[in-house]
Length: 98
Image (cartoon, rainbow, N blue to C red; front, top):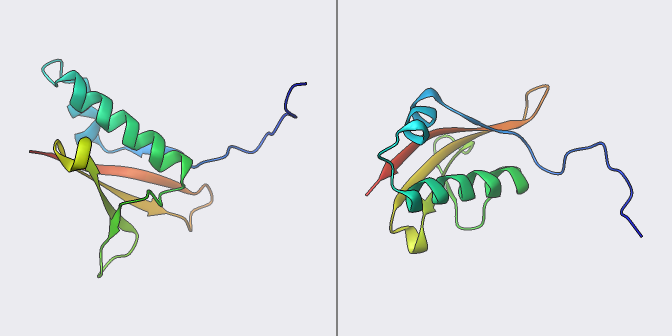
């Protein structure tokens, strides 16, 4: 039997800043880094920004950082949770590669 149709999305959209968009469009970006960035984006979407292992800023709790790759070996991704908007969403603001 099929599951009932659910018109409500389960997660929140995960928008990209111009900086992150440009990074993902860079053809020189290694495939494992590209995959890690996309995987984190999916996690951000599915958890509405509360990714296990992410840390929040003490001064601005809407800003989070999450490690990229196995044990954070590829870098860190930063994102902001915009929960008080008409359409709640998250914005991937920066990716810092190691």
